[in-house]
Amino acid sequence: MSSMILVDLIQIVMTTLTVGSMYALVAVGVSLIYNATGVINFAQGEFVMLSGMTVASLYGTLGWPLPAAVAAALVVVVLYAALLMAITSAFAARISLIGVLIITIGASIATQGAAARIWDSDTHRFPPFSGDDPIRILDATITPQALWIIGVSAICIAGLIWFMRSTITGKAMRACALDKAAATMVGIPVRTTILLSFVLSGLLGAAGGIVTTPLTTIDANGGMLLAIKGFTAAMLGGMGSIPGALLGALLIALVETTTVTFASGAYKELPTFTIIILVLLLLPRGLVGGRHETGLHHDDLTRT
Amino acid sequence: MLELVNLSVSYGNISALKGVSLKVEPGEIVALIGSNGAGKSTLIKACAGLVRPTAGEIHLGGTNLLREAPRRRAALGMAVVPENRRLFGEMSVRDNLQLGAYSQRHDRKAIAEDLAEVFELFPRLEERQSQRAMTMSGGEQQMLAIGRALMSRPKLVLMDEPSIGLAPKIVSLIFGAIKRMREHGITVLLAEQNAAATLKIADRAYVLELGRVTMSGKALELWETDKVRKLYLGGEAA
Image (cartoon, rainbow over all chains, first blue to last red):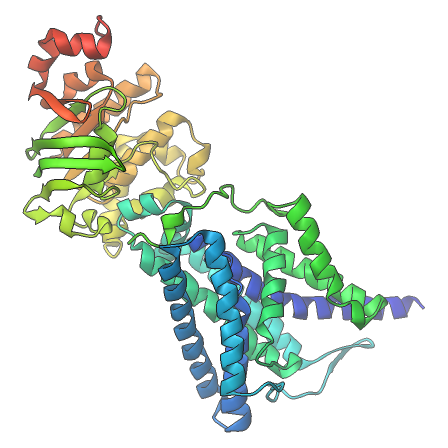
């Protein structure tokens, strides 16, 4: 009996880490763009979808070597991120931040439609990187691909945190997030820095799409739910905080995994949506506090 | 060094500067004195590229600043110590200083030298270098704002009310630092309400009232005029 509980526990921890890593990549990306622009990007999941679909067709279907397919997916996502930045900036000159947020929802829906046309509406996947044979820990199992997901996410997020804290370009990004006028005065190119935030955010999502698709599959409409999960995680942790986004993602994954393990898969999405309502009502600044300033500057996207 | 020609700035229907012309020569400290709402901050912001003039010209050296992107000013040799300091509050003192050197970020040797000079000017900043900027006292924050400006190796520093809200002892420390900047060949345009302290260290001064220059001349001579004393001191000098 007690070993059953232990097995459940190991299984929950492993699944939480796997699912949480995926959500963390999206949540950290949401926070990055929010910091740079004040906009919550609901097209964040499209980065994941586009990279997953690209690798699935180039590597899975057309038989390109995996590194070439991955490189192509990264290029696609970087271009898409730049396009998204251009669209949001163009609208930000004329409408409110809430308007820009709705534009990102529109961009997400348009991207889903375009993807369904370029590919189709079916689910896609490609073979896992290190085979399908599960690794056993006691009686719990974990697939090698889950280890890829956890490892790649950990490296990406640790790399991002190092970049933001230790390089002058990363510090310039943080400076832009804190005060764009002051950043301009010391000579930081604000628009280039915002573009960099979009690109880095896109690359995080792309990494997620590449490592998770073999395990979870992807379809043209798969991005939106991920964006909502990422948004929820980022809000729970504290919008704008990278450690907060990480914490929020792991907590949501834990609640989801526990629900699926002890209740039913049918209730999988229930906790996320319950959490987002509770957080928005009771804890709008999240667990670790997020950004102090909520009155964002409308000209953030428009100033050169 | 810096020349403004007939500079006008409006916020909607309200005109904040009405055809201001002034000149700052290399190596000078030029004071810009005036009360609240006289247009001092607007003039500094226009030079920094944060507000767009409705008319007039701003020249830095041979460059027409209105044709340059705001962020290019640091590379052209202009640094700003803005109103309210505008530090990167959640970042460390050291990061703030390093960002001040953004326009010459590839020259590590120059950055290390400048950092040593700023620490020599304000030893307090060296003690506090890993502290977050927002947790420091007002005086320390002002030192950091000046230090950040100096990190870009500027030829010209614009300062917007560096003495505001500070204790007299800290004010004299800040003004002492401004004098030392001039000794190092840095030109300063100093906007201040504190006419007494400012006119003592400035070479020349302009008096700004309701968006217009109403008086200008040698700082000490302006200090002798009754009008300046009455307007900005209410009588007695410090």
